[in-house]
Image (cartoon, rainbow, N blue to C red; front, side, top):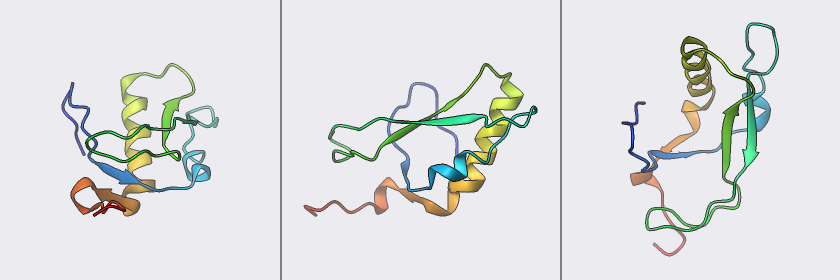
Length: 92
């Protein structure tokens, strides 16, 4: 999945166990990514989400490593991806 630079519209929702993200390791065998809770307020596109999180790299990595982490993350999460068009809100 590619999101154009400057396009901050959500592509969808993923529900996944944080422990799976910890399985992505860097070359030294250390966990490459961490998860930060980041409750999301309601917007025109999505309802409030207290379970929202942001995934960040734990260190400075080169572009090749970051792309590898992104690909590994997508492999873990793609089966749980729900496109925005398929999301039903409580009020619908």
